[in-house]
Image (cartoon, rainbow, N blue to C red; front, side, top):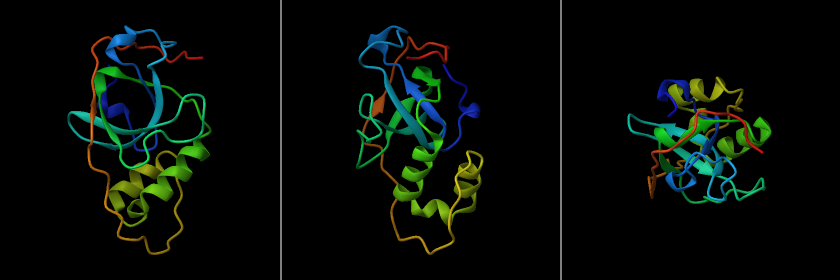
Length: 136
């Protein structure tokens, strides 16, 4: 289980579902990045397996902290590009801008559109997560 205080918007993570039983090479393990946080879940976008394309295109998924492993798997510039494109409000909300800046995300100061933040459309939960960052 990852400590929620260790996560930041833009941080790369791996979601290890319960059925993987801690096996980081299990086919259901998913690579993604954090888009928002609350007391119970990290909201994340996930990539298609072995790809730079997003699997989740319409919303972030609420993911239980107990199945998250912090792990860098893509170039951070790819994550930053997705965050800026998907969440233009990050450029105008100081708290989001500061959280994103902690991960090297830079915004131009153009007016963001009125994009609404993602709604939770599903929860990923697990109980047998691992505490390792070794993957692939």
